[in-house]
Every structure is written in C-alpha cells, then in structure tokens.
Amino acid sequence: MLRNWLSDALTGMPRRSSTEVDMDLSRFADVADRIAVVDTETTGVYPSDRIVEIAVVTLDLQGRVIDEWDTLVNPERDVGPTWIHGVTPSMLTHAPTFGEIAGELAARINGAIVSAHNLPFDTRMLFHEFERHDVEVAFGFGFDTLALTRCKLGVACEDNGISLNGAHQALTDARATAQLLLRIEAGFDNARAASVSSPLRTTGRTGQCRRDAASQLRIAPPSYLAELASRLDHVTGSAEIAVYLDLLDRAMADLHLDDQERKLLRELAHDIGLDDVGIRQAHDLWVRDLTAAAAEDGVVDAEEYDQLLRAAHVLEIDAGSIDRRTAAERTATVEIKLEPGTSVCFTGAVVDEAGRETQREALEAHARSLGLTVEDSFTKSRCDLLIAADPATTSSKAVKARRWGLPIVSAADLFLAQAGATVRGYEVVVGGSTAHTCGQCGRAFTTDKPRAPKDPRCATCGPPSRPERKAKLDVDGPLSGRRLWCSPNCGDDVRSLIEFAGGAVGKSLSKTVYAVVVASGDEQVSQVLRAEALDLVVVSEDRAKEEINAQLALRNDQTDQAAEPAMVRSTVKAPTDPRSSPAKWHADPVGEATWRWWDGRAWTNHTAP
Image: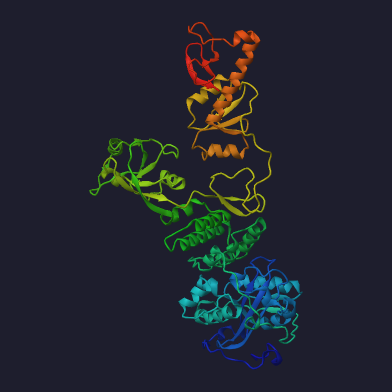
C-alpha cells in the first residue's frame, strides 16, 4: 500500500536512510499511510515571493525514509537573500520552473500528513505557487516541529542530538526535520488530517536539478545584521510568537519594512493567531535578542549601534532600550583631572559602607572646596561632568550624559579626591545617533540630530531640494514689529539690542519667528534643530549684533543727514553733558569703533563699525 501513493516509475524502490530511527506512528493509520516532510528556500516571506529550492522526505508510519526528492526551482525573478539560502542565479540555469514540477510535487504530498519546521510558512509559500498553476492543494492539519519545540531548527536539532550540517539547504533541513519529528512525535496529538491535491499530473523526474549538480559561484558575505539574525536563539513560551519570530528573522535581513510589507507581515501574524499586542511583544523580543547578540563580545561599535537603532526604528521599538542594554559595551574609561572651574551636577543618593546616606549638601560642599562649579540642573552647555552614586545608573540625567557624550564620575571617587587630582570617569564613545525614516525611499537611517528634519532624506537619496536659505538677517531697517528667538545661552546684550531696535524677543519658537539667534555651542539645542526643520533664518549671536548695529548706525546716519548740513555733521562731537543729548548713535569717543550708542544717560557697549 505504501508504494501506491506514487507510480513505480517515479519513485523506484523504497530506500532507507542511514540516520533512520524506528518509531511507531501507527496511531495515524486511519488518517494517512505516510508523512511528507517538506522544506522550502525562498526569495522572501511574502505572498509575492517565490520558491528557489524544495525538498520532500517521505516517511512511513514506522519512521522509515521511503523517498527523498529535491530540486532547485527557477523563480523567474531575483533570487533574493543569497546569503541565507546560498542559491545564486547561475545555479538556476538548468533548473525547472515551479510549473514544470507542480504535478510531481502535488503527487508526493497528496494523501500524506505534511510536516515542516514552521509549517504555516512552507505551506503558505507552496499554496501560492500551486495557485499560480491552477493546482488545488488542501494541506490538512500536519506536524509543525517549530510550534512544538519553539526554537530554531539548529537549536532543536542540537537539543535532540541530531546533526545539522549545511543549514538552509532544502534537503538537509528536510532530513533534519524528519529526524526531529521522530524524536518528538509523542508531543503531537492525534488530531491530524492528510493533504489533498487536484489534479495530479506526474511527469516523471525530468527537469529535476539538484543543488550539488548545479554550477556555483562564490557567495558574497551576509550583511552584519543578516548574519547576526541567523544566529538568534529566541526563547519564548508562545508557539505563535516562535513561528512569527522565524518569519521576522528572514523579513528583517535587509533592515527594511515598507508599508506594504508591514501590512502583509501583520496579516501573516494574525493568520497564525497573534493579535497586535502579541506582535508588539514579538518585536520587542526580537530587538532584545538582536541587541544581546551584538553585545555578546563585550563591544558595540558604531556600525553595530547604527544598525541596532535602525532595526528598533523599523519595528517601532523605543530606541532607549538599545541605549540601556548596550551602555556598558559603548562606554570607555577616561582619566579626568579636577581642574578649577569644572562644572558638575549630581544625581542619585550616595550610601557609605555602613549603609548611611551621605547628604547631598556635603558632596556639593566638597566639590566646591576642590574649585568645582556645582550646577543645579544638568545641561550640555553648562556641565562638564555628571557625578553619580552609581555610574551605571539609568537616571534621566545619566541617560542625557551618555547621549551627549559627557563623562560620569563616581560620587565616592569624587568625595575621596583632592584638588587637582585625577579621577576615573565613564564616557560613552559610541552613541548620540537617532533613527529616522527617509521621506524618499522609506528606509531607516541615522543622524546625530535628535529630531527629524522636515523632509528627512538618507545619504543615498541625498538632501531635498529647497530654496537657498538666507545667510544673514537681511533687515532693511530697524526691527520694529519683528519677533526673534534667542537660544538659552545668548547674552543679555543681544536681547537688549533687539528690543532697542524695535524688535521683540520671543519666549516660544514657531514659524512666525523672523529669525533665530544662537550662541556658540547651542547648535544641537532641540529648539535650534527645530528652527532648522522649520527652515527659519538661523544666525550667530555675534552676526546678529553686527547687523543690527549696522542698521541702527545707518538709520541714525540718515537722520543726521536730514537734520544737519554735511559739513556740520562731520564735526559732531560726543556730548559732554548727559542732559544735553537724547539717546542716539554718536562717533565713538574712545575710538574703539566708528559709532557708539548713547542711551540718553551714559555710554553703552553697543558699537557699530
């Protein structure tokens, strides 16, 4: 009876595998007389993707291998991730299309209980291929070894003492899955159903193309992330999440999911029983496992950090989790000399060996005795060091310090230090990047700016075309009626000058602001980055003072020309009596500049060239 499922001309005599394991599967005799273990290698995971290799290992109900069949398949499109399945276009020169093997393959699985490691994936790929060639296949209810073991094939084989050499080769994986099935078959219930195929059109073995007979070219090495993802060992108590994570390993090999891929991946997740909460949990687990794999060697370099951020961004996972989980691997020890004037800020409570808390006031007093400046708030521009009870803390101040690349020093070390001493600090040497989505190609990319620009573009797509921005204020007179915004570290003199020229200093930043004035070192302040995104004019503090003074000088010059003869004007002297002249520009009495502003009571520091 076992040989009636396929003609003798097609199968030949039944054969036994050298790795055969005798098991009793007779409890399924009322369902089928054999089990067809399948494995497919594909161009991807979506319905539009195609099969590039397939293998079927057939077992009888005593666990004996009675047939093996495999072939490369011409997908009639790009072969996809060669670094995963190892199939190159040159290997498919003489390979049959799926249409040429559809009947033969349908006959092999017809009436059998189908098994695979991630059965939903393999049967879905087969279903779409058969559908393209008008072959109807109902796969019934088979054995999914992934759902039962909840781990990758390599890990499951290792746990069960099965050799797996040459993973991601269809026949090798199908053989390993068959052996795995026999080791764990007691875990499957008896509720199984055989597959049914129609019509059956066997054409013999013509067109079969084995991998070992195909001409092969050297395969390019995988991308860092693809190689890392292939080694991930996801541990989960959910069979549905285990199946979905196996799909995610393949889908995320190129670090990209466009809107259509996101939709299809969500649909696939729903098909295997995951709701949106489960999908979120799976994404978080995948990013966590990827991060752990990257940090396994104790170092996370710039390239690894960049790709981890992009992966988290694509899967909509908070990038802060990457920073927290890789902080130690991105941190270097630095020697810091406690020089007078160094600005420090404290975080956390310090406890001595006896468990007594050291008062913050005592720590701050000691810091001042060393000549250090103690800041109440932690900012990038005003603080040089963060002093923490535990340098590994994840307090909000410590998170900012690592993002900004500022060193963190142990409070205990500081408390024992003397003036001018050198202490050990911990500084993040890799970090500060933020992931964005390119508005042109939709791919994730990273920049050193925390906020995405108005029209973000990756390096491949290049910057968006936009009108050339003004290089200066370009005022044609006083600032009357105009509102400017000044960054936090701008001096009071520039603010006073703006108001004196008739302008207003805005408290909030919006697109209605005429210009943004920034102090040195404020280029990365969030509001300044937002101003750039809004395409506002951004000028330095010195440039703003220079241009406003020049315009005020021009205005007063024009006023003087209208009120006095030229010869008289050229000999105007600075007022000697504070009550003798209203506020206006005059020739600089000390000769440091051409003009100096008299405010009606005294000379000011406002000058014009």
